[in-house]
Amino acid sequence: SQQGEEDPQALSIQEGENATMNCSYKTSINNLQWYRQNSGRGLVHLILIRSNEREKHSGRLRVTLDTSKKSSSLLITASRAADTASYFCATDLIQGAQKLVFGQGTRLTINP
Amino acid sequence: EPEVTQTPSHQVTQMGQEVILRCVPISNHLYFYWYRQILGQKVEFLVSFYNNEISEKSEIFDDQFSVERPDGSNFTLKIRSTKLEDSAMYFCASIRGAYTGELFFGEGSRLTVL
Image (cartoon, rainbow over all chains, first blue to last red; front, top):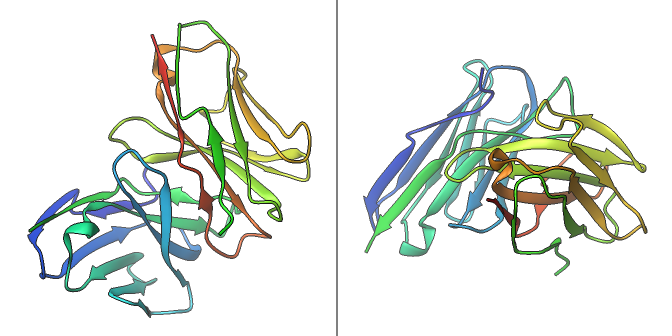
């Protein structure tokens, strides 16, 4: 079974709109992170939220975490064409630490 | 800004050949990782390495795979006898200390097995 599942798998919106991506996971975590990947490139860390936090902001990014529902959301406000990329959530499991487990990713396309 | 560097960026090899992918982690980092991403799919954990030994490995990381840190700088992934299904993007990552934050990823090495 998958630890991280993003929803939707693909999202296409107009520039200036907000983009919301969701992530669900199955086991207890220490923290949850979101990463961005431009096509064919490496992953870039965006934001980390700890299991005792409920919401975190960084610039145009807002992340929420609901540990009771084992879910997280990433909101990108006022989207730009340059935000076009794949976005992955990754969890650091309490058991078997020292690694991140990535979800399937959401492919976000921002149309100018 | 320090970064993780990987070489080669792209390697094409024949099935059954040995491949070595190289990584130079960030200099003061202590934990090192290899991940794999088959085209269009999720990023999969292969192995973690700390204090000159493997700390955890996935089911993917079978006897055909090995890692080492030969000189305190480079961190290598060796695939002994490549298969077609080994074709993927391989990412090296590192983190400074015990797991509390973000992984720093390299740009990846694309392996194509023919």
